[in-house]
Length: 350
View 1: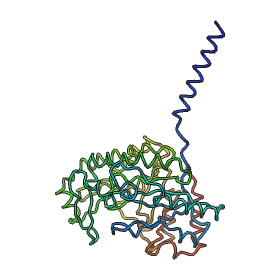
View 2: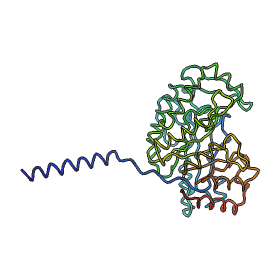
View 3: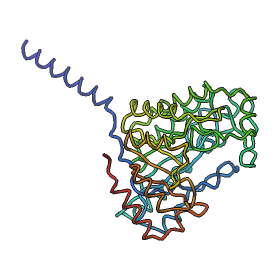
View 4: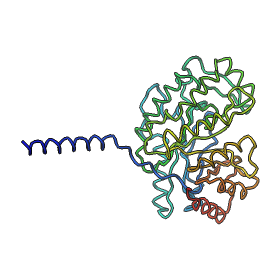
């Protein structure tokens, strides 16, 4: 009888360990460090598709630590609730990265995924809740869906489940940009203040309360991503107001760190030696809350390159995205890029 009890106890213990193992969370991948190429950008809002090319990095091998692979929601899910196809733009770009890393094993690239929605959403998503909204931004006609609405967010969340199921376990992909609720850029908290944008949005039923709710739930949209870090691009909240609200953004930052800890990476796309004053409270909050912190330069070719990089390093950045289009890093000497990369790589978390 005693032996039976011992055997039963061991069996229960083994079952308990198996259950723990079954629900154990995967280790979070390391952050991307150093210089990062922000990838293809010229397509944005012009009706074309992003072209992920490593040509600028192949011309400067062994310097960069990361690459942003860009795709769009419409490319990856052209039909409602559709499965993500194989050999899509992400798969093709990952193959190129693997080839690059095989040639440069001394400094391989890590990948950040940035999936554009908003004006790059599929046609079916743009019709959720009504007909697509015709707007004009930067003198270009752009059509957008009701990105703020609960129904749109539900479709986006379902898409994230499919995306994470396919890519969260890929070792090359260290980070994914959080683009829930995005409209015209990959900065979810940014909406252009042009009347040619805001007036059509108002007419289509845009509500600040729903937009704030969408942003409040954005991190939860990415819950299926367990091993990949989630990078959230930060701006003061505006909505329909003319004055930004950095406190709302800081509350989102705090909630992100509370919910997913070190998996939450703070990002800002306005890094410059002469930082816009509206961004300063967010930079201060990023520095106060600590790593991981990353930036993208405000200008494709900053007027003060050196001062821009040094400001990012001083703020605690582990990586800085540099433009590869419209000038950008291809114009910078290799020796200078190597020095900047070393500065960032030495910027260890406190």
